[in-house]
Length: 238
Image (tube, rainbow, N blue to C red):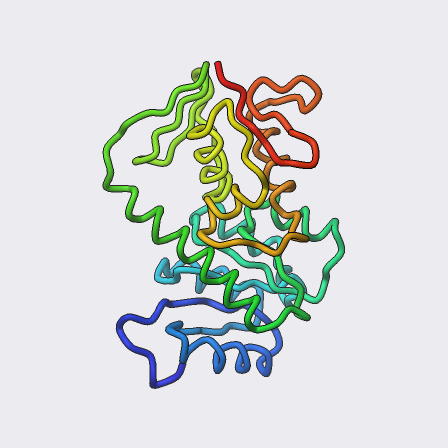
């Protein structure tokens, strides 16, 4: 870790088996306010993430000892730390798997450093907002059988408490706040990330699909989340 790290630096864990890439990412991010620790195997990544001091994890898929998907599963058993998957495997099936397992974002290693920085800023901003909301009141948003408590960041459907990722909660909260009104993908992404994504970024649809599944929603006869073709999504008002 660079000796230029200050107490204000945001601690980030990078799990990648390429020390050179880790060094390049660290050299780029640390002058911008991040303190980057790097480990190079899956088991090391799980162990380091358990320290609970990191505000974000940059995670590769192809790792020795344990692949990135298994590392992500282990992290999600204990932590909601934002995870940004940075990998050479860019197939859609891999992206879908990573996002469904609880990754907050997914980028190919061919992305620019500016794009990596933008995504990292987005996930750490969400994390900071979540920490701040934990001390807020317990006001509820209620729509039919669906109840959201923003302060506690909990969601229940009838008598069942739902287990959502941080991003899924933020998406659902955005929709609930605008129940009965259409939210475009760009508006949703701006709500949850505090910035505008590139227009070709479709990861929002993967997160929404996972959220619908947890709600038991049928896309053809939506009770809660309705797709508005070519525009975005809307929460059905009850």
